[in-house]
Image (tube, rainbow, N blue to C red):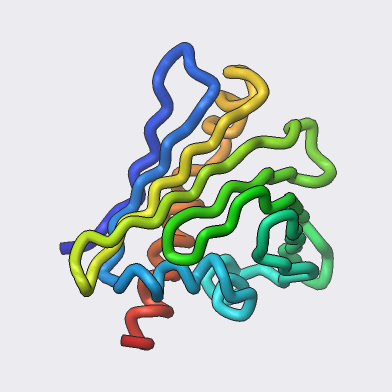
Amino acid sequence: MEKKTNVRAEDGKQEIVITREFDLPLNLLFKAYEESEIFEQWMGTKVIKWENKKHGSYAFETSHNSNVVFKANGTIHEFVPNEKITRTFEMEGTSFPVQLEYLTFEKITDESSRLIIHIIFQSIKFRDQLLQMPFAQGINMAHNRLQEILIKCI
């Protein structure tokens, strides 16, 4: 059965909840967010800074035809291996303000796991602007790549 990423945005709330089940053990799913080399592969991006620890920070950028087309950065507020990451996320060079992200990793079985990403925006307006972009399609494609890349490690 093919897994799909679910993006839920309730009317009147300034949040998005993203849920995805993977055919991957919990520790392997977590590595996709912990190890920069794996993150670069499934996100199709270049990691500039990667300090996965409490009070650490990260930055990455995506290029097309040798031009940087997207840059993001943030601060890690909580980092508990195989359980959760709490961080900020800022898209550089856009009008979007910093958002707060809670990533929760759950074991379903020894061979499967779930990722829940709870994103809080400064306003409903900014949340809705993001949803007008191909955000849901992009995160689903990225999660599909994550699954494809890491399934080979089992």
